[in-house]
Image (tube, rainbow, N blue to C red):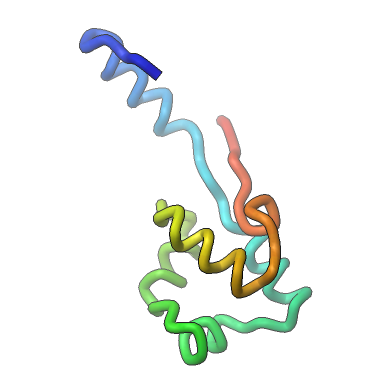
Length: 84
């Protein structure tokens, strides 16, 4: 999306009202019998990344890819876009 300089501030303010939430991740993990401990101890996922996901903070797409591979699921089984 091309954004002009004058529109940039308004665009960024609008972007802050959109949110990715990871509530579906925890449900998918429960359904598949995978714990946070398993992700940390067996899969090399850092505890700080688990915290970021719990707080619905941004994570990299390669992280989402890794989680999809571990859980054998699709992106929509992990994340959901919420617009205010």
